[in-house]
Image (cartoon, one colour):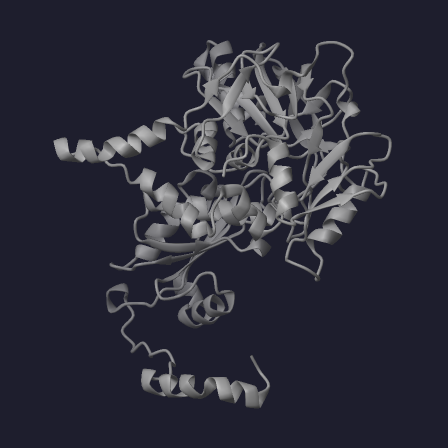
Length: 518
C-alpha cells in the first residue's frame, strides 16, 4: 500500500512492531546518534534493530525525531511494498522493457502499460500539510533537533534531506540527497559533490553567466563542490533550492536512486507508491516540494560563494575532511504543526544506509542490464561501503568479455566511482561471499587478470592521489578460455553426484537428529 506521508509510514511501522517510542530524555548532540548506532549494531533481535521515535529530546520540548526508519531489510521491503527485492526489480524491469513498437499490435499491447505509467506522474495541488505553518521572518534552523553525529563533526548536519534544484536549460527538476551542515540560524553548507546533478545545475548557470568560453572552461577547472572559487573572474547570480525533510518513504528513497538523467525522481516515487506524488509551489522560490513534507526549507545559493564544510563522520567509517562547498541561504521555512524531524546517522557499517543501499542495488541491476545485457547479478557488499567494491556475475560468450563489462560499469553514472570490480562466471552466487572468495582467488593469475585504470573517484575516497581523481582496479575472475591464451586444462569443481546426494537427503532428518544438528 502507498504511504501518503511520513505519519502514515510511522503508523505502519507501529502496527508491524517495527517502531520503538523512546521516552528517555536524549540529546541530539552525539547522544541520539550513539543510541542509534548501538541499536543498529545490536546482536539481539532482528538485524538493524527497530526504528526509533524519540519523544523526549533535550532542549526541544514537544519535538519528535524519527531515525533508523529504513534500518532493516524488513522495513525496506515494507517501505517499497514488496515481499522481496527481486519482486521490486521485476516491477522496474517491466517498464524498462518498453521497446519501440514494431506494428499496430505491439502498440495495442503497450497501451495498458503506458496508461498505468501515466498515473505515476506528479501533480501540483494548491496547498498541503507542509503549509500549515509559514515562516518568512523570525525563523531558525536551530528550532529543529538537528543532530551532531560524531565528535569531530564540523557541527550539526541535516542528514536526510530531499534537495530540489532545476535544470536551467530543460527546466526539469532533480531531487538529490545532499547533507547540509548548519552554520547558523539561516545558512547551511550544501554538500553536492561535483559529479552530482545539483552541482551540474550550478555549473550550467555559471556557463550562462560567463560569456567567454575560455573563461568558462577555466572556471570549471577551478571548481570545488560544483561552485567556482571566488578569486577573480567568477560569475554572479543565484540558484534556487528547496529542501524537504520528513517525506513519505517512496520520495525519500527516490532521492538516492541512481535514476537515468531524463527520469525525474518524483516519477520514480510515484511508481513506487503506485500513486502520483502531490506537489505544492514554494513560497519564495520557483520550485515544487511534496505537499505532505514535515518541514520545507526554501532559499538559494550564490554562484560565487563557498565556505568550508566538514569534517563529517561518513558512511565509509572515516571522517570526510573539510572542503569548500556552496552556502545555502534559507529565505523561508514552512512546516506541519508539531513537525516530526526525520534524520539518519552514517558511520561504520552496518547502519541504516546499508539497508537502503542494498535496495538501491536491486534497483540498479535492471538499469545496468539495459546497457550490459550479459549481467546476471551484482553484489555491493556492505563492508565495501558500496563504491569500494562491486562483485558481478556474467554470461560469458567471448574472450575479454569480463574486461568489457568492467569498462562498461565505469561508464555508468554513479558506478563510475567503483574502486574495485570483481567479475565472475554466471554459476557463481555473487551474494555468497565465501563462494566468491573461493572461486575468485582460485581463478586468477594476478599479473594476467588484474587491470588498473585512472578516472574520477568518489569525493569520500581519502586514499586517492588527488581529490576526486585516482585509480580503480578490475579483476577478471572468470574461467579462462583457450581463446584468451590459456591452454592448460581447467579442472572441474568438486561436487557430489546427484544419486548420492538424494540418498543422503532421504536419511538426513534422522541423521541430523542423531548428530544433534539442524
